[in-house]
Amino acid sequence: DQKKCLPARQNKPACFQCWLYCPDAVISKTIPIQINLEYCKGCGICAQVCPAQAITMVNEEELYSEK
Image (spheres, rainbow, N blue to C red):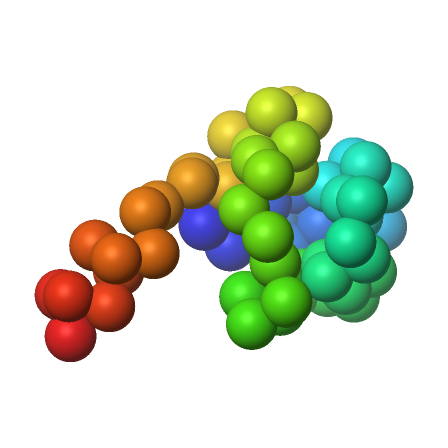
């Protein structure tokens, strides 16, 4: 949720905990942050370390069945 993300909200490098802890390096260190869902393995570490709770884990099957 970009509305909750600290760097996106403040438009300056503020946190990037998700980028730092991602074991697969699928999170960009840019503003706004982007997650490459094609290569993300869904470990959830980014959601756990996000102080703003801007990342929510969603079951991939549910995500694609909604479309």
